[in-house]
Length: 144
Image 1: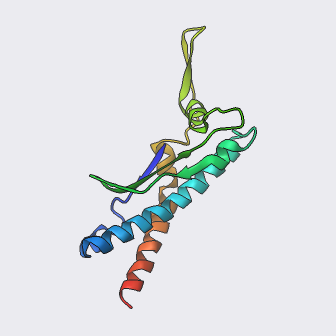
Image 2 (image 1 turned 90 degrees about the vertical axis):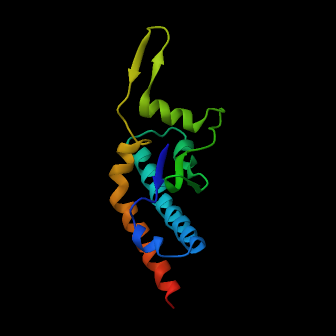
Image 3 (image 1 turned 90 degrees about the horizontal axis):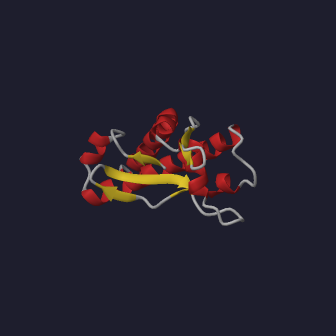
């Protein structure tokens, strides 16, 4: 799973607002950032030819936006199952991390990351830009 958290994007501006407005803007920022992350993950799946039926690519979606101790966050991962009932999340984790081959007793390592922090860091500039644009738009609406 890739997770995106509102970290330092506009923290000083948001801290000056009342809590309800702050929460609403953070949720909107994370939701828009998650849309970019979903698109990037789908493109990465396509680029790396991890497509047989297209179910995993189409299953990439954002989970619910939630508040935790770190701030507002959202998880993005391949959801659902393919037509045979195999979890898209499980397939993505095997592609991403590898698997343990029972017969040989060896771990089959993979280095095709698109679910973890390396992938998130690669996408960070685009996501931060979208989140800053969302913050600017929301602040303009507040100042009208």
